[in-house]
Length: 156
Length: 287
Image (cartoon, rainbow over all chains, first blue to last red; front, side, top):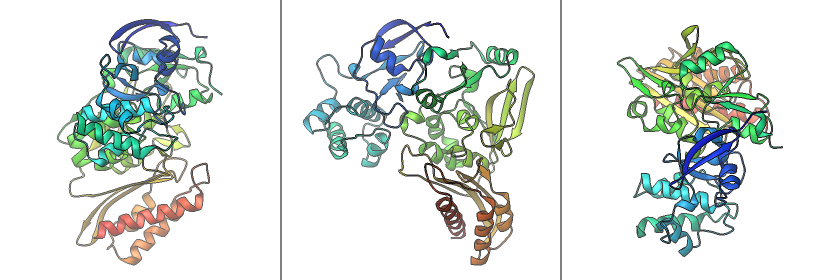
């Protein structure tokens, strides 16, 4: 039996000090200790992207990151994408163009799309498909999601 | 069923020396934990029997890509994203970049490492066929020192490696001898992203006056280990690429590999696709 260890990290700009079991999944710590339930669990094995967050500027599957590995890191979850009441262009486009259905994949899709646009402000259609390839939508609403990202690019 | 998380230790060493001291003092007790993209899947499934892990992810000594006149040397913690972003790798080792691009999705590529791909020792891994075809060497380090060895031969059986319990994989070295070679990498999976390979091939060829003067062929998911197919190479090396010699190489490959039925595919499908991929490689090299 392992004892808990102290870690410090930032989530959406806010510093946190937590006592954690080192192998606890980042996903569970975000949801259960920090009550940031916007990050969803889908498959729990890195296949679906529902648990996507940004970790030190790169998207990761938070179900595959043991929390000991985020000590000293900076994380952005879906709760940190909007600026106050101002939605990100990707979020607004998902609302305007029907990019969300049941909503489970939506936080991960939006983080993957935001990450894509930050790295590549003018993506081709192939870039968008590749950027979202790690995110599954079980409602199969891919065309609306794809269209939302295209529109977000146009509206920025 | 999910594993009981408090039952697992994940200790973070301060340095590589610290890590080597720990595994040197207690060989076999500590196993390395890098990007976690395979181990965390097993943890969640309740199929991670080993309990004590060393968090090597923060060790800067195991990162970085160094280019000299003769070699490119990659730290074991080089991620698939790092591979794809590197100019020299893109121009001289395109199969490694393609393998990195076809491993998982972007979130996996940001965490998965070349060292992890090697030491996890899955015969279905995407980057090892490219590493074998590029004649990679690997460096193992321990408190006793460091040793370089050819990557070919490192895997001795399913999930078996010639690595001692007090050693860590530290670097991977690729000789820069790929100029004027033809590179052929194909991964066949259920879908383009995320899928684990049913069959994967990495092969390079030098063709001069329609004669195959140099050839290296490696396949994944067709044997207990990722396999450098030397009998197949011998069957075609030095020969003109005629329909007869291509067919002879094809038949040699079908004897050399030993695919199985499993959750992702069948032995007969793998055998046929592997043979087709080899023929496509040889015909592409000829044209």
